[in-house]
Image 1 (cartoon, rainbow, N blue to C red):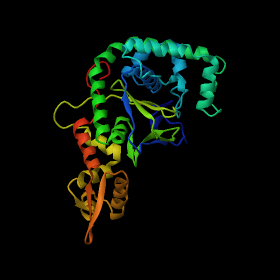
Image 2 (image 1 turned 135 degrees about the vertical axis):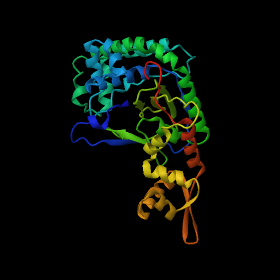
Image 3 (image 1 turned 45 degrees about the vertical axis):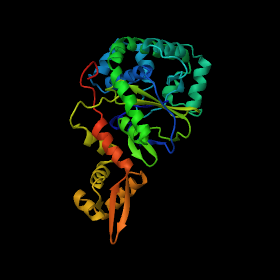
Image 4 (image 1 turned 135 degrees about the horizontal axis):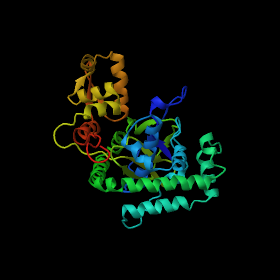
Length: 354
């Protein structure tokens, strides 16, 4: 399991931040699940991170209900400069089961964790870290079941704190499922996932995000299982290693209520980088390369470099007219611009996590 939690500012000195690249090079089956477990785990980790940084956030205050033992157990998951955790922490969602209440789903996840044996947890840790677990995970060898029970007890207490907020945000998660459905139908799923990740960016045939333990992963024919988290949480939970499915949990993003979204331009800049976002907007009106250079104050070589990248991502095309080279957005590029006009996310402004 990969938890994207650690801001670059908290990375240990000399630690180089890598990236995880997810290749989405074909149409894949997509399921959006409404399951609260990952949100509770993410909330716990966000709260511990903020406590360590001295932030008086709503997440840090939520963790005040936890016993010291649970805080220590959860601290294994938020070790600075690391993102990997044993796969048993990733929720197991039964797609064949009938719809169940959030409370029953949480009980099943917690019961599964509590029933994990010491041998199973030990094998999980060994496999996750290729036989060389880092010190903060190697330290649980002496009492693996005690660590698991203390962590699970903490998650159970936090669920009692956030259950009402989870229910209040049901509409946001339903809207996110609709957004993903639209992206899948229009061939913009990779763009939607890059936008869903708090620090995601588009990449040729996929998307990428900063990750201390970065890897390259190809979804292939596996089912893509998407799990919207509580809005306001700026982190993700992912498992890219399962043989039949790719699990990705990310914060739900409410639709702006009428009028242009003031965050949209900034988010598109973050998704593509500012020069590429500028060039994509300009190319919507069919521009020649020299016009793009003048409008962005970039050198011709820099414009060529960024346009090459946009071409590889399928967002623009080039065509020559005599001595001029024109650049125009593709249908995919226009869908990206439209996506930010209609679905650009912003943090929840009301409720417990506003």
